[in-house]
Length: 201
Length: 346
Image (cartoon, rainbow over all chains, first blue to last red; front, side, top):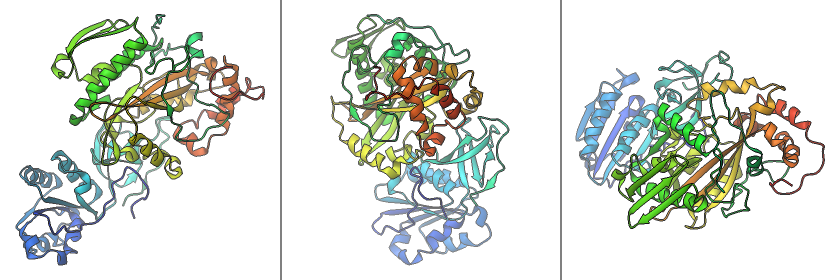
């Protein structure tokens, strides 16, 4: 389960399909495919004809999620090889989006965070973006010292992927950066960092 | 009376000290012998002469050195100043407010001359004499908020008000007690206070937010906050925690008096006229323990406050390694006599 009670952390309410939207854009990653597939019943032919599905399988590669999503018969379907390519496509889609467009994001928290940044950059209100967390609890963490972002962090402390300092993963989340904060854990007594614990599997 | 500005440092050789007069005007934050979180807001009105509340925007003997330290921080890390694009009106509001308050409070040091939107600003301590068009960004060397906060003591955040919340959307933050503007910019009131222990459960932030959403123009409000810092270092940012963190392990019985500082923030909040944003001024004051014990009331009270702190606050404020050593050292100056109510020296 997700850790409760972090005030700065977004709440992921789950993918509820908004029937009146003029356009539905689904940005999905890995197990996030099931967030949409589980709501097949809410997708009538009108909704599907207004839908664009962007999917990056990542860890769910080979499980057939991409075929199942394609089989929904949405107006547009795009299978992206990586998160970066999905976000590039999402930028393009939002650049030409109109009023009445709904964005739905589902997958790991790091993916939701990155797709949310794209949405914010295009002037969408974060509260209007519909999100669901699926898959790993691994965190996307920004080192507060060198500002480098390390993806898929499962342990705390962990070595910053950029400057190498051992970082404690704080329960403080920035929507603008799409990341948790990492702070040097042994600053007061260098070399005293405790063993890493697997906390975010 | 003109202030004699000191040449001193907040880094390396740490030559920062308070004069005897400046100790007397220190905004000691404890009005009783214990401490716990509270909303503790009071009207930000002028106080007595010879106190830090004589003017609503306070300048003291450390002004020139503090502005030099800010410039050094910004050279290393320009992200300590940031403003989101929709905050330009609030930036001009802030420039106006700080120029007016500094010119009215310290006319021997600052002059603001206005002729329509043609403004001339003279800052004698820093040797600045600039003429610009109010509202025209291109007539200043940098954005208006950066321009004026390079010339004003304390950290400054501008919070935007919308959707029944406050949003941290601009700031100049170089003298902070371990929080990152770069990380927190764009967050709402509850989000940027996320890491603070105990206070959420106590309802402090709900009440404070409700209060601030109704803040009126011309009626600024203030509160105290405090922590402790080893060495007179203004830049205790999380960005540089790996550089200043080791200082916390250097406190010994022999050096408490010089090294351990009480760090007080006088936080004032101002409704801005054009933007309806709120300017949040976090004015930081530092005083070492040798200086603190020159005021007998404070020497008695401060060790008592340190003894009564809840464990969560000791941890959050980062006092764990040196609190007991500091209490032991200070206790020599506490004869057990009762202290008078209020914060000021007897």
